[in-house]
Length: 241
Image (tube, rainbow, N blue to C red):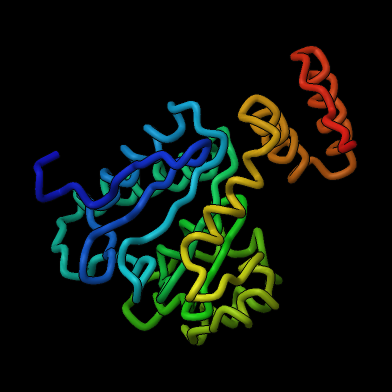
């Protein structure tokens, strides 16, 4: 990766790792952008951080989706699609809790990224849209329907309309809204709260949640198995005095 293709950075704040996307002007998704995020997500996963935050250095935009200025032939299109799927899979399967901290516009592929995270925090300036149909593309529904109703998925895809942070919270896409004046300190503070049990417990708990998400009535058995694993690892309940 050449120096001008480093579009993300990985930093530590105590037990929290922060992966910051930074490809001005709008964090458009190009080959280099995907590789840079992937490299930093993998570095965060390999660290001993208990929680990871994915965010943007650009105050007005989280991610604007595919870089439509990137001219690719058929082979390159296929390669980019494969790399994008790998990135989304890495975001989904990172072993520790991954929090998306969204400020500004989150468009197209940006929604794919945040939908794969465990928790989504937004500022009041955040907005979300899937305008792919307007530019002859499709994508995002598979990831979005993990969080919102099918009717809302189809509404977002058919119209391409943008929704604000409050609406996104009502839909279930956003879990917490943090005031602009408290950004990003409150997002980090929330991540530190999540990190409290420690990496070992959180890794096991996330395994249980992932296993139970699609397991139907068998989901609780998966959670019980992780409880037993925590006991074997000596992860005890901390009781307040």
